[in-house]
Length: 528
Image 1: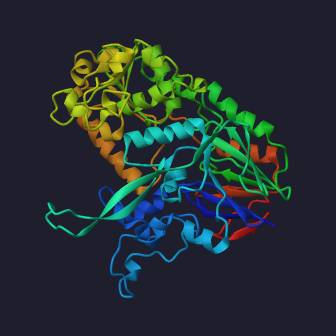
Image 2 (image 1 turned 60 degrees about the vertical axis):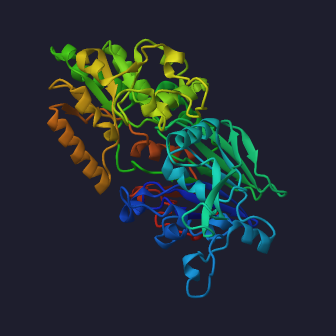
Image 3 (image 1 turned 120 degrees about the vertical axis):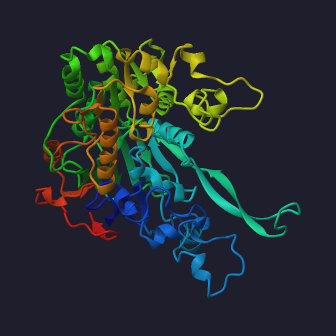
């Protein structure tokens, strides 16, 4: 028999985690964090204890309790001493580790994990998985995971664990034990669009084919899984059909190349209740037209907010900046990302940082003096290389793209009409240094808030805009990263699957198909 089980992404947006099983062999599709769950317990500086391994996560049901997928070090504190029945619960999770499952059953619980894209609600939990589990994804997704690690504290490409060490004689507490962190490299395998992967086990139960699709982050893939018992399952991941021409063609190719009547379609439904359609081309036209009639525009700054991983939105704002004959000034995280993704021709970013009308914003940090030393902890502000070595010359963006590539706040203040500035929520302090003229424009190109935290962020944003008397543009300027309700239903009708499982949606009841399984239970096995 072939079975499918869901451990996340059910009746909520994000946290996807799916297992397909046949003949005691299993593969997993995505394993991400569920923002809505974690926001119930954690916020700002309150977060799971990093040295308590998985105990905090399991206690609050923040990650799937699946036996045999987590490393032993994540399940049991191997550095703990003097464990007895009274304190055992502090150091053990009561679930089989990867190593224990392998020893008991003679083979691993999971043969492979397939990632659709690099958003945290699809990939975050891989940092807990045993390093022996092979992870498949597109080459762009792997590169994005590397970039995320460079720009944050995440370590997706390595498995972390602790070993017990004894403090030396020069310590304040000589002879006492401490934990020292070590890392082991993960086995991440890249696959190309329409490449077929025979999952590495003797029986070759699963044959997986990936398809590039359009989403708000580059490198996204959908998957078609064929099994030894001639079952066929399709997983859309997150996708849309209204990006730039070179992007949406990927999604259209995906649904056109899937043979009709798969046994199962696992379909994302973020916008199942929303039939509004707005393409990236529409955003370009709407943004350009909304300011073109302003007779004072030449004296005003234009600002746009969008995620730094959204290459598609970067291309959109670049076109708007060109239409308005302005220099597009992007944030350093986006510049770092573009620099390291230039090798991928399909993204259409090669050579763009060399254009005279694209600049990188340089904020003041640490001493606030614009000294190179101010950026030694966050090197990406001035350099595309974060692995600086003492004694070697620092590679700066200026070396690659010209001396005037970096733009500072006072330069924008002097000549606001020259620039189109990319600025996100957590960079709003820069408005104090930039001092934009009253009546300057702020375009919010991100999704509308869908929870209390997003609503609070919106209120804070509006306070900043009010303080600096900026005109807020937040309607008709966002092309979603997800397909509309009509597009979702049209896709299902075209594929005509035997079963439909709604995922990544808060409204599964709107999947109005007789073969839709709308009340999926977490962890339950469904036969295919």
